[in-house]
Image 1 (cartoon, rainbow, N blue to C red):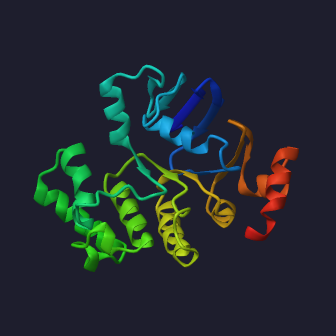
Image 2 (image 1 turned 180 degrees about the vertical axis):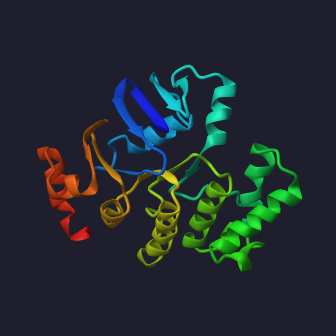
Length: 247
């Protein structure tokens, strides 16, 4: 077991957003979280990376258990060194080039020398076929290119786990497949991933485990075949029936 989450709870304005979440992930698994908008999926990911502070719960990563509600500064930094996050709205530095956006985390997070960081960033861009865009600023790039740079920024850190928060939701439809292909290639390479997405094709064909999430809790979890072909819960069946044309 690489990662374990136990009894994760979170409230906003006295409204319970996460209602005691429990799940485990093994190394190399691709866990896809699906469910209706507003059900708490993004809050779950942000709590795992301490972009939100949980009210209760624990995270165990590589055998190190951390209180999600009361982490130390060192624990937060440790988790962020071993995980990475790809955001739905790219979150690139607008005043930095593609190369600089990727190298920043290596320089300031991993303490690498600038020339070494930039060398790794160039290799990451070349791997995605974006070498010619290394000196472009985000405003000069398409949404798909920006998101692929976000993926490169995450993978160059060699994290144990990458968290993807609806990585294609802000993209035009014709750009979605390019980003999905990058993610599928990562999965094939054995990268452990937690992916929140509305792309049912990805959940059906790439995930090793699918979690159906609704109303702040895990309703059902299983393999893609189990969840898509023989869902046990009525709530799951209704959700999938409404999206049947998408997978």
